[in-house]
Image (tube, rainbow, N blue to C red; front, side, top):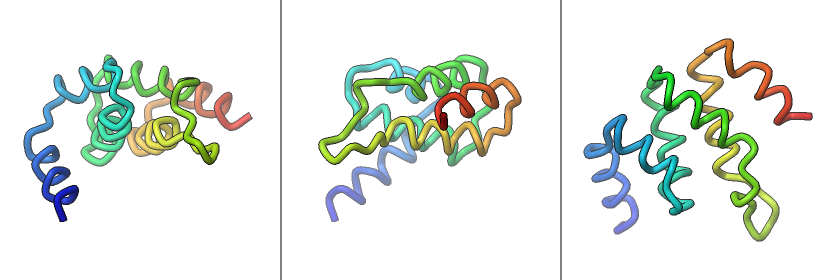
Length: 95
């Protein structure tokens, strides 16, 4: 219950500037959340787009079981945004 309340608070309080700051920051959880948020609200902003594209190659994102939650959320966000700049980086990430 506490995590849902926290996530709800974050959704209400997150701004573009905060999401960009989180994507640049060291906290993996906040980075994953920021990538999700940018896609969820389909935020079209050049700096956000560039950071999402950079997140596709983040090596520090790997979980103990081999997943890449930041990469996954960044890829989903880029897909929702539909910007042609993201096509080549997304294809490279899939290769």
